[in-house]
Image (tube, rainbow, N blue to C red):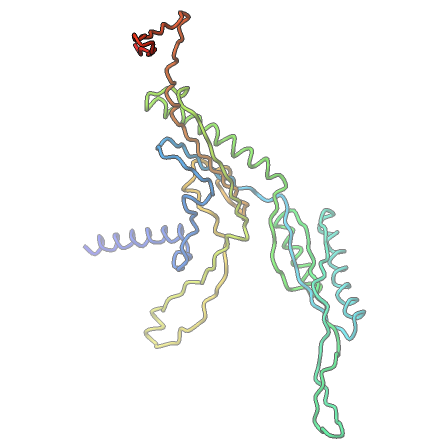
Length: 324
């Protein structure tokens, strides 16, 4: 009996381990997965009849290039000193980028240049303790914008920036150079699925599509990687030894963020469904409605024969039209 119970417990433990591998510690987080609503793409449809075919598709596009932004701040006794010190760091990074790749470009964005004040004690005749603000230096802030091609280059850019005293990494933006080609591929795939559904619809209802008018509405929605990062807190629980020996278990839990793309369960088709790095997700939705053509009005055929009109003449000479 003990062997049976032990085997059952081992099976349950193994199943729990497999489930844990599939879902990860993020399952303990209070944040819900990011799932778009069914009407997340703004495609208005104003049809009273239930004759609408809807197709939704998504394209997970790998970015063609990236743009990283770092911030620098430098203080100096005057503008020349502050500018020279900050430019030394920028030029060192610019030179180092050539060793990483000749295609890397660096651009400088000047953010602010403000004086730094300090309170100086001045003794006057009628006031012995008077503090006056006087400029003692200047603070110059600049951003450097670096264009790179892949995520491997970003690691080298980080090392290069930190080696030159640049530690403030603001963000990276993903770029797709040919968005029109992605939209065209989504339209082409959706069109073929619409025609399949349309022919199926006609067979199921036993109707002739020539007797119906067609109207459509379509729309796109683009989600960039920076919009889909969720917070994550490392999971922790009180251990057996902590409870037994009454130890303190108030260690702070690490909080970080992770990429959480749009889940593809609501789409009819997905191009590049496997996401190995943060992607630009382009979504497309099309509505095609068929509406029965109005019945043609009967055509009145006019006769070539002259129309006969009858009149009645009374004895007193009055004429009256007889509507026969």
